Length: 255
Image: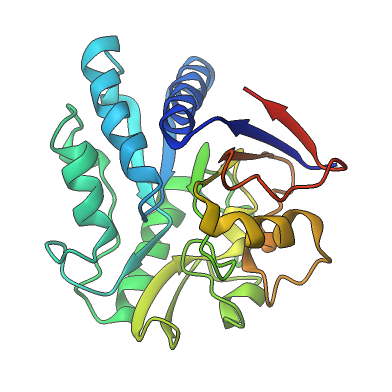
């Protein structure tokens, strides 16, 4: 049974997502003195980051012990409007007291394969590995993900070779659907996370959300289905418009 938390609208979804981040940060800092958060791009997370920045000023979040990672990036300069980093910088980094050394961005301006190799090397230093070619020894504490209308998540698009990757943590791929290079975390890292939260909003996502949650398992066509943490917790946080087509057999918690 898949558990989905449904919120009346996008604003309440954003507020709940911030609560989730803050709670998991407190838990991780108490247990391990460090919290590692992988951020998603796209439109749904932006108000989450803006609210998180406001909460950071009010609640005194200890950003000195928080590492910010990126789930994927477009291969463009960091000041390009299409850059995930550019959006996150405007929504969060410029508004909260986050040490620059704690922000670990993917260098979208570099040659794609090099950017992927460099980011994987960074992650291996931060997370350690269970064995050569293995999964992270310490999973990312929380990975935030979105879902596109075609079922993609991060930059794992339908038919992408990264969907079947079993060793590399980060890959560069040219995505025909959007006509550009992307760098993305692979399922090796995503499925080693302690917590994963999908944030999905809007009626345009309703049909795809229904297919991903209720349909047959087809991760090659529906990449969001590939995210199944081995020992972590998977949470879908969606608004009522996105959840409109979900059947009763999916456990839905109205909040």
